[in-house]
Image (cartoon, rainbow over the protein chains, first blue to last red):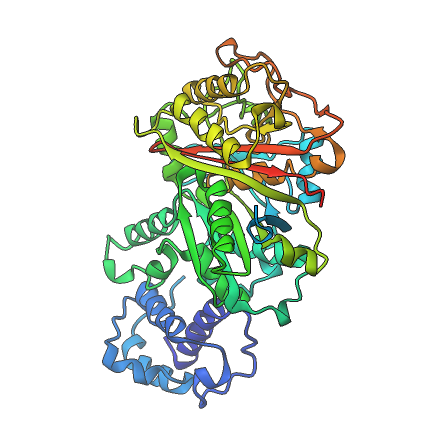
Length: 87
Length: 411
């Protein structure tokens, strides 16, 4: 997956778990929680969706890397580089 | 009875397979319109079910619908509709004095089945089991979702009472209002049961799942060709208040709960017991200070099972011997709405206080002589002229019986 494809994967997940939000103006460098209604259970949905779609096990200690789009993509890039986008 | 012990119904919200508010529901019942359709469930060939079509988004965001359960959405819809119908100024309501009491037949099966199916797609890897499972399956979920949605900070609980649950929700509310634990109760019953295949499969294994080539004719209480239960979803929720509070704010009063009773068969896991059912009805009558002949209409529980209908008819004939009390049955239209059944069956009959009409029991084409009821309102509605008191039966597995008596409010 390319960087842009990883970003789209995350965006698709966010649209599913926060269906009432308008994500068109999402700032990649600002924390998700500062831009949208996203509580700890929603956040776990991001982790779960990645686990289901790409078999990535993200340890709890690494959750701090998933605060914004930019940091999430940076964290996932080495882990998803050789993985195709799920159909 | 002290004025403060008199409890009245002041608002109604409901969703049934044939109506998403009281007016629609009542019209369907008077016009003989069924709500039973063919329905796809997991693992099994298509079944018949009563399916609701209310708008989940009317009172919930898409996020909250996704987050919660179907029972929660049913409850939120009905609770909001009831409060709106009651004309309560919600912004000025002291929500710490509101209690939510909802009867349920079961809860959690839907989510558990969904999660087991989900992990089956991942070779039963339990790390994909949802973190939403616990908050969705705790037994208080439907009532708890109502408090979250409406900002209610008073007590909430569900009353697990199998298919006697709808009445049980109302009874809990009456008791809490009389104890002055709350000033306003949001109470009734809800069901999401059609979203679990297990309830269909279990009734099928028991030989108690209805089948018919015409879905509208599948639910046939008291008919000789009945062959089991049609499972339905739904919800019926009321606002209940102490009479002086309701009068003070000029509320519309749909009826007054003047009697109730619950008891247990202590005889069988699934087979009902006409003696205990009769005792339950007599206890409710006694508490209301009424004789059987004072009841104008009985809303029967009958589910169209072989033995269940016979037991209830036996109990009714014992209690109402020599009376001309009319008897009808709502499940013949919508199937068995489980936790919501008792509530919906009462609510669909309440407008009879105004129009004097007992809605029909449809599909009684050939009354079964083993459950003969001389005053059954069969096939067509009956104009009784005046209806002032309704007795509502709801019975459930493990031998739980509940009876509610509601009287027209006449000052």
